[in-house]
Image (cartoon, rainbow, N blue to C red; front, side, top):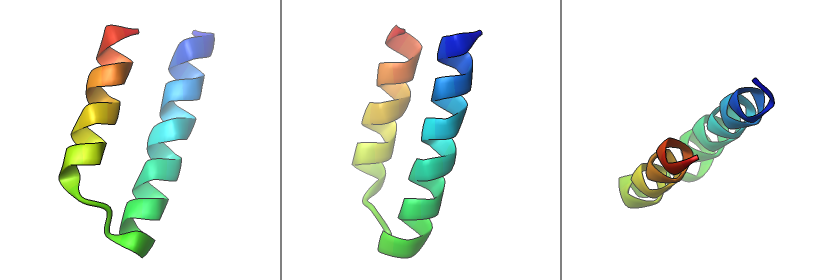
Length: 38
């Protein structure tokens, strides 16, 4: 449950940053893969 909350907060931060900085989708996919490995 704790890891799930951390993951959700992380995705929210990534979403906000990607909207402001337009981060490339490769970084976003890498973070999603990292969450799936947890």
